[in-house]
Image 1 (cartoon, helix red, strand yellow):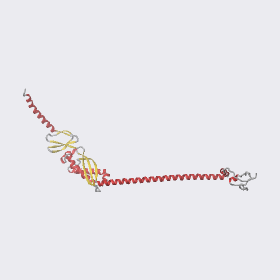
Image 2: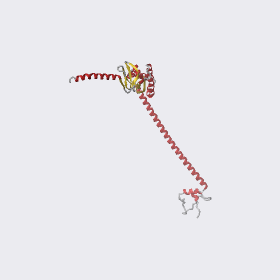
Image 3: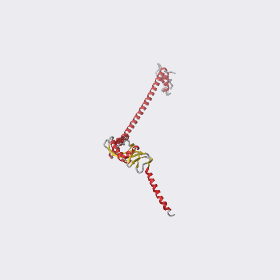
Image 4: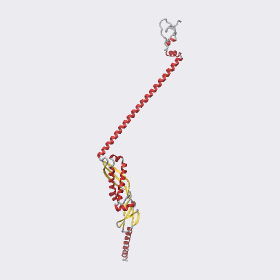
Length: 307
């Protein structure tokens, strides 16, 4: 009975060894390519032309080595200092978003390297060169006011530069540029002060122009108001004059057609007081013509008729 544990141990050790060896062999025969990557197979150091897609795969044990290559969208940041068209020093910070072509991943890995090597040896130098070349085409002010055009020209220049470089290695279109962002422009302190002074002067000029327009508008409105008032007054005077002229004309016509109206107007103007005559105590009889300022024929004004 005492020999049973020893005999079991003797059988158990070989079994464990076999299982470990089997697991190691099986592990060397399989590979899992992670999401967002492709697998580049190197057989005894020789890169195979076809990449493995993401997922589970078998490979030759102890012979094939699978390198994971990231083909997801990534970004490289670079800063370039260059002189503008008007000889102002400008420091431009640029971020380029790009990805590797998965179908060409084995060739990229073989001739350039992994993603970090692509960024340091290809993308960042390309950004430096293209930013400096495009910056020299614009003045410092235009770099700000025409930012979208500057960005477009830098991106086009980057596409051309990178593809020409890759074409020499047989890797044309191995890098796909998705987007380019100009994150910042930094100018010299002197230029910044000049810009501030220019903006302030433009603001003051605009304010003076607006004030002038306001004064002119107010003056024109006041003149128009006076003109309207004068026109209204002239119209009122004209209407009143016409009314008076019409009234005089109608009255003259009426007097001409009816002389009795003259006597009526005289009576209307009489204040009711008889003329005072001294002496005799006799109240004289007055002719209506005396009241009207006229005398009948053959009678002297103011003479009284005998009773």
